[in-house]
Image 1 (cartoon, rainbow, N blue to C red):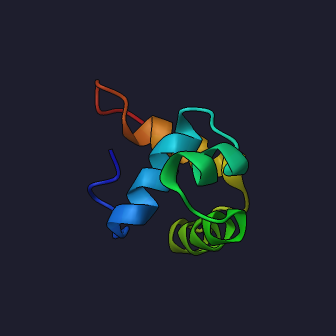
Image 2: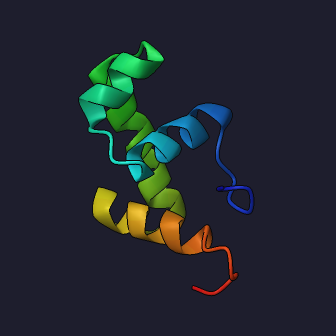
Image 3: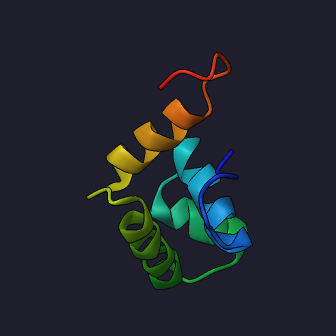
Length: 71
């Protein structure tokens, strides 16, 4: 998934769950993290990719994963 981007292993887990439709609270519950920790990770990811919010992050990730390589 996010192999071309420089994410930590935890950031990759969080981005993957976000892209699959999980809320921040669901991500926190699944990974055994505090909600604020998830938000902190996402803020760093937004900055790394230059996206303003979770919707744009999910779009960016899903476009990057397209099997035909387009997008």
